[in-house]
Image 1 (cartoon, each protein chain N blue to C red):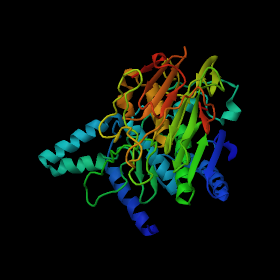
Image 2: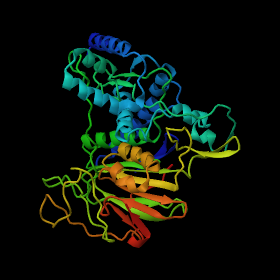
Image 3: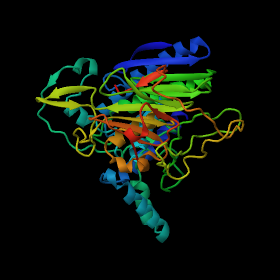
Image 4: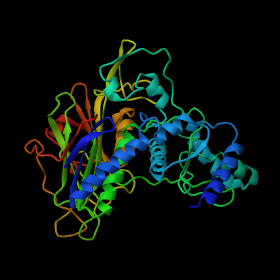
Amino acid sequence: MSRFELMGTTAQVKVVGDPDLERQAVARLHELERRWSRFVPDSEISQLNDVTGRPRVVSPDTCKLVHTACTAWRLTRGLFDPTVFDAVVASGYDRPWTHLAGSSVLRTEGMSASPGCGEIVVDVESSLVWLPRNVRLDPGGLGKGLAADIVAEELIAKGAEAALVEIGGDLRVAGAPRRHWKIGIEHPHWPGTIVGSCHLDDGGVATSSRLKRRWVLNNGERHHLVDPSTGQNPSSDLDTVTVVAGTAWWAEALTKALFLTPTHQWSKMLRGNTALGIDAEGAMTSSGNRRILRLAMRDSEVVDV
Amino acid sequence: MTDDERLQRVASLTTRRAAAGPIMNVRADRLTRVLMTASCAVSVAGAGALIANRHVVPATVTKQPAGDQPMRIDDSLPPLATLDGGRGGGESRVGPQESESGVATEPIGERSEISPGSSGDPGTTSVDPVDASSDTEVDAITGGS
């Protein structure tokens, strides 16, 4: 098992198979970070954001990232939106988290609605991406999830029996494990305490939390989750949302969408995937499959929607 | 794809993009589909061209058809997570299950293909429930970052 710093957080790779595959996976993840980080000035995402309004040929990896982000935007009807870049920067998150943590930021510009992906052109065959003028991308958690998906699938293609790739709690498991992968869900108010677990052979798990990545903006506290329709933090009672889906990128996109979806409409958004939400009082809401999501409390303590 | 082909493709996209005119409201995806349907119904070439030119909605240019046909939208959903699936022949996705509280969870459409069944059949599953509280051994922890 390898554990290392990546994309502003901690990552780990577990491979059942040739140990050298683990080393290759770590190198591949660093390569994806160099291509996708908005904090790396010469990353392909930074270059796309610097020159909007013109088509640009990018690597197949980056083309896939933009395509996937736009797909997530469409499938969630805009509730997940990778074009929140300007809103996120306006809110003060304009530097790597390691530099922002604990900081107090002053800003005069206001936050506004995000433009969305409707005018973005992605041509996979020519590996071309065309961002409309002043539309910029923040891959955010979806970049982490997709990186986990890509590397886990590549590991299996290279002969690994099974693989787990985790980046900051967003993860993908793949292959044919000898036993089910078991992913613990951390209680948002009691770090280190597991409230339940996700059991799966192949799929992605992601959690979004409004209690992490917080900073002070103009004397008011902010966090990294953004409602694309306002540019502001979402007005949700939930502290965390965890989703289990077939891929990590889709799980990640759904966590963002569920923060903006009334719980009674979760199943419609989830389309068969599984989710757990925990609010500020510790109350839990779940939707989906209870064989995948197993909680350490009685059913009466969890609202099924 | 050769450089020449790529350049040709970029030129084609550039032309189409330039013809698209004013930026269409990104929330108008539904409107685009309505217009597309309408164009099929009335078969007005001008309307078709207009829609084709405007149809640059999210990442849909994955496979650009010849001519001025509207670009295809891939509406397929990502797969579900699997448990006890994909081994020994038949793939078995985890399907909807009635929770212990008796509240049935209902995935939409065809996403869930099977429900838990007996062991021995490669197409079905049988998993012993795990008490999450009694087993703290996990492969990873998710909690946001």
